[in-house]
Length: 296
Ligand code: G1P
Image (tube, rainbow, N blue to C red; front, side, top):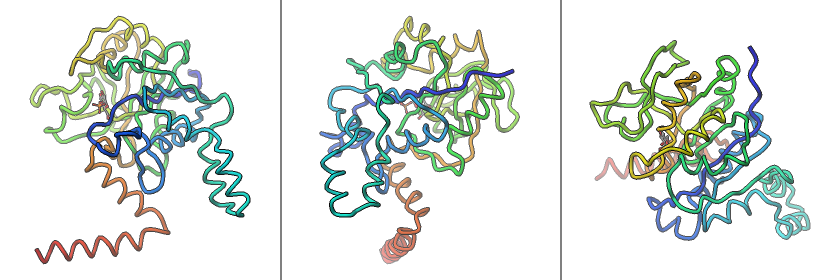
């Protein structure tokens, strides 16, 4: 069986990012930098590699920097060209999306992830789409969304990236109630948003990458608020699962929760350690701090 290719991706970028204040006072949390690139650019590049051609950003007040980041910057480009800084010019241009490729819509009220996704319904239309949460940064040889595309072309339906988490962390994630598990593909019979410890049906947790069928929009449009008084995306999955399969993909790679300072710090170390220009310096700095700690 063949399934329609996924060419559209939604990026919910309306959240406030209060955990990172004051960094996020006047700058979107998705523009937080890991090494030298904003989180949202990592997500967009992952989507490009997986074949995405249309990029829908669900933004809110104060997020204009995201729109500017993926636009041309004529004065900067002209200045770099004039000074012969060709490498820097290529870097600036690589962050630019082609004319008409990016769509920016507003979530006017912060009603939750499910509501943000629903806001994109007219722009997505009646086709399956990818959904990427830029807070979840994934270091992988083959990008996570590309791994999920392979699973989608095998299985169809809805697909989410999953990983196994320690029991005490189940209340941070959407957790799968597992029907079948072959080690990589995990079919769910239910998904529960942030269950309390002891009530979780498994330890298999959703990470912020999804491939979803457009039927989700109708469910989200009728949905009541859930955990935290918000319209939760996960709460739409049980109704979706009644009509079509929902699979988790245990991706190969390491995910960093860049919505938390600890995860963001670790991501900086992990990504810098893959960079030939930074690795040696990074390791010598770490050794220095290690010595400081040993002396304390
Ligand atoms: C969201 C989803 C949750 C998912 C998580 C992955 O939660 O609601 O199901 O497991 O992203 O990062 P949030 O982190 O926005 O609270």
